[in-house]
Amino acid sequence: MLKEAKAHTRRVRALDQLHRGDEIEARLSVGPNYDDVIIRRGSVEETAPGIGVVWIMDHHTGMRKAINADECSVWRVA
Image 1 (cartoon, rainbow, N blue to C red):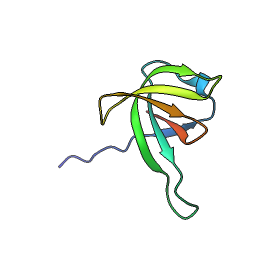
Image 2 (tube, rainbow, N blue to C red):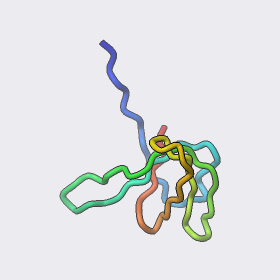
Image 3 (cartoon, rainbow, N blue to C red):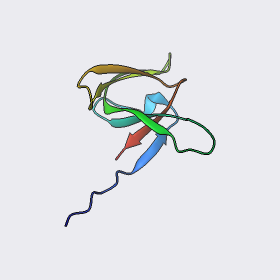
Image 4 (tube, rainbow, N blue to C red):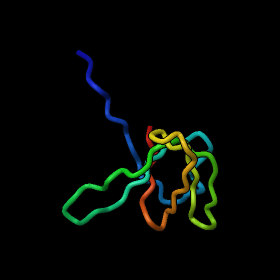
């Protein structure tokens, strides 16, 4: 029986650390007593650090989505 390996994640504090092709998660905090909820996961298409936005190709929908770093936290998936 194979075990599913958990991906190692690390929080991205500055969007200029991201590059095209990086795998990331966008997480939303739902409260102090709960874990963050993953709302998007995908590969980076484009970044705009000056306005706090990163565009990804969402793995779930297959569509390009914008993530606003002011509204959620960004995590790099390794």
